[in-house]
Length: 231
Ligand SMILES: C[S@@+](CC[C@H](N)C(=O)[O-])C[C@H]1O[C@@H](n2cnc3c(N)ncnc32)[C@H](O)[C@@H]1O
Image 1 (cartoon, rainbow, N blue to C red):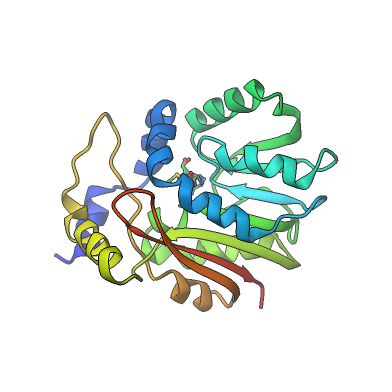
Image 2 (cartoon, rainbow, N blue to C red; image 1 turned 120 degrees about the vertical axis):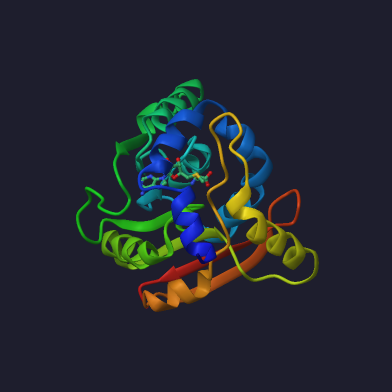
């Protein structure tokens, strides 16, 4: 049995939705350690402008939504979609605390089939979303993202990558090799794993306009940030 098949056995279909629902209350603790650094860098290079219509695909605990709201300005609502009800609850609480709940439209749904018209958005964020899908599903997801993106829009992808040298390569190899054997702790088990980010993006016929290889704040796991257009 190959590594990919072992992964599929460990992660049965629909496992992710249940997992993110169960872990929504403390997911921000995990995110704080692993995801805030690359997400902050992605926001910096995304260069979001006032008035842009932005979708955060798989918004998790709403960290990114909170940061995007002031960038697009008070007249534009920010859209988010995520399939885990727990993530919706946590995000709504976060936005309420900050008095921002009227600035967003949150949809509970699947990013593989989004309830938005073609060409609806100027910017689509997909942060730590691609790298937790089955490899065979990534193209389908990218095509759905492409469908809702307007012709001049841009997609910002943040994902664990197979790239990286030195410390990053060591960290990545360690993570990759032991990935099938990670234990489940309090219902949470890391399901993101390194993928060939650029290859997937090119295969979906996006054009890469900016890219950055970075790493999470601890352990140096390599993360790829890519900004691309419809090409
Ligand atoms: C690793 S977290 C990333 C959250 C956020 N984007 C971030 O960078 O912190 C993955 C999120 O994607 C959501 N998710 C995963 N697959 C999804 C899908 N197919 N449709 C909608 N949401 C999905 C999960 O519920 C979870 O909130």
